[in-house]
Image 1 (cartoon, rainbow, N blue to C red):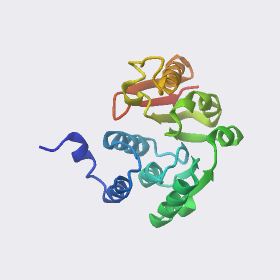
Image 2 (cartoon, rainbow, N blue to C red):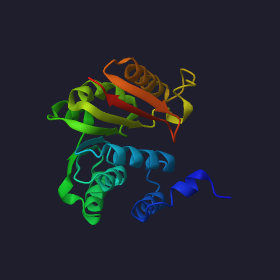
Image 3 (tube, one colour):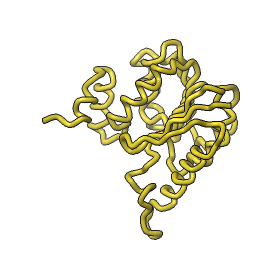
Length: 205
């Protein structure tokens, strides 16, 4: 009998091809349940300006652009090799002219960004989400949506590991990030136990 992930991952032939490419090369991309949620949220919002932190091979960027007619994407990737593959994929799938790909450290790039965005997707360095949040709040327009992947981080955020665990800092930072989202009165936020955990926030004010 098929698993839920098996059913969800067979929906879009374009994304299926990219997923197969990633799996053949052991490249991490979104889990199927997370992918479907991001697709639905993007379709509902129909954003015009998307900011993405963590391009990888362009998987989630292509997903969002294919679900939001007229959207443009600014996306940031630290790894030069991954960024090169992403650029190729954006061109291959017809989105080259809708994407501005920044290559470098998001900690340096995000504070330099200007303008506003109505949709932000974070799937970059998990331990740095909390560092990006103040800048994201300035960039995200009222009514804008912030979606963050992997916020439960393999269950370590809710069941924090021993202090000697090599991922303890990431888990603690993500815990602080979730608390910041929920306590910020400018946001309406929730955390969903989907995939590796996804937070969804709407800026109210």
